[in-house]
Image (cartoon, rainbow, N blue to C red; front, side, top):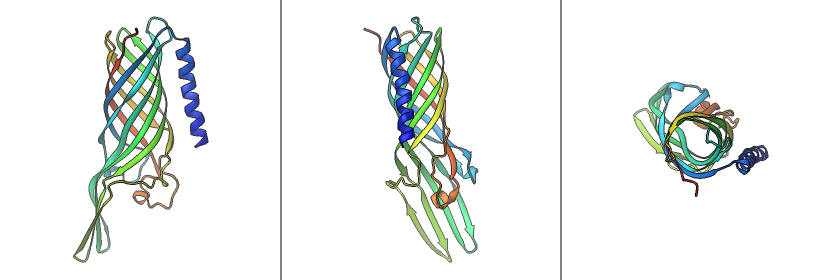
Length: 227
């Protein structure tokens, strides 16, 4: 936790120092969608499908070059990541288990982009700190044994002890920004670290012990005009 806080403070310090030296600072809003799944060494990878989630928040753009060509842009975003269970049956001798439903990992993402605006064409990249706020697990598990069937569904998971709540990662993207400040952005974000702590293999049967977050993002942004 301490390392993560230091990392976040470093990112925000870079953004603050850059903003203080900038010629123009603009506030903005962003909203869009994540198309997320898992990366890394995922066991039974074919049983975890992509899912769509919401992202949205605020941003601060600080012009570094004086003409808008180069700027630094920190953002604070609520971001829904995760995956959808592909309906799959697992057989153990006379027993059968079927798992389906989606899992939402609700994060607070803080990317710090170094942004190039070449006549409206946007190129951006930078580090990202993410903090896991909550998990909504809608996985339904159906167990069958000798003609007897039982079903259980998890809706909200408050116990996050098996997950790493702090994550360092990266974000890169391209887009187009109009002169009025409206932009359309396509980004990819990924984590450097596994989001499941080392455990006894009980979290999704150990499939995700070396998994990392991964998401494509499509969003609209709007930078408010300078006064």
